[in-house]
Length: 244
Image (cartoon, rainbow, N blue to C red):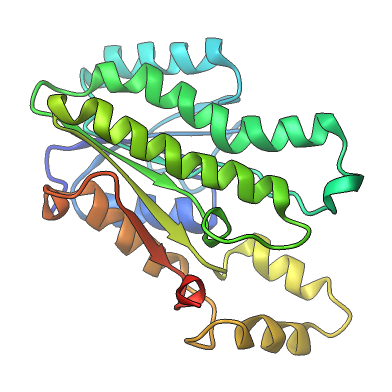
C-alpha cells in the first residue's frame, strides 16, 4: 500500500503502459483520476473517475483540473503517460504533422503541469513524465518524436528546479521498446513478424522487449515516497539501449 491515501492523475490510461500503471497504482491503494481520448475506458474500475478529452486543448485541461479539485480536493501524483508517435523522414514530414507530434508529446504535458501543480498539497507532490529512449538518443525516421520526448525531459528538469521549494518532485521514466498492443500490432504488420521481432530485440543489450509491468514498476517508484529525495532525474527502462 505504497500509495495509500494518495490521489493520482494518469493520462493515456487506456492500454499498454497506462493500463499497467493504473492496475499497479490501484493495488498500492491510490485513488485514480484517468483521462484519454476514448469516450469510454473499458479498463476503468467503478471507483475510478474517468474524464475523456484532448490534452492539447487548454480549455479541457483547465476543466479537468477544476473537476479534480471538486471531486478529489488535491492531487498528489500526476503520471504524464500520453503521447503520439510518428515515423517519417524529416524532409517528408509536413509542418502540421510535426506540430501535432510536438503538441501531443510536449505542449500537452506543459498544460497538465501548469494546471495541476496548483492542486498539489502543501506538503508537495510528484510528477512522473513518461518520455522514451528516443528522448535521449536520435534515430532516423523518428526525429520529431525524439525532439518532443527530449523536450519533455528538459521540461521535467526545469520544473523540478522551479518547484523544488514547494517540494514538488518532477522525474522522468524513459522506456525502451515495450511489448504494448501498439508495438505488437506494428510487429505483426511486418512481412516476417518473427524475424522483425528478433531484429528489434537484437538491438537491445538484454535481448528482449520490456513489459508494461516493468515500466509501471519504475513509474510507481518515482511516484512514491521511496524516491522522496529524487527530483529532476531520468530513469531509463530500456534494457541497456541508451548505455551504448
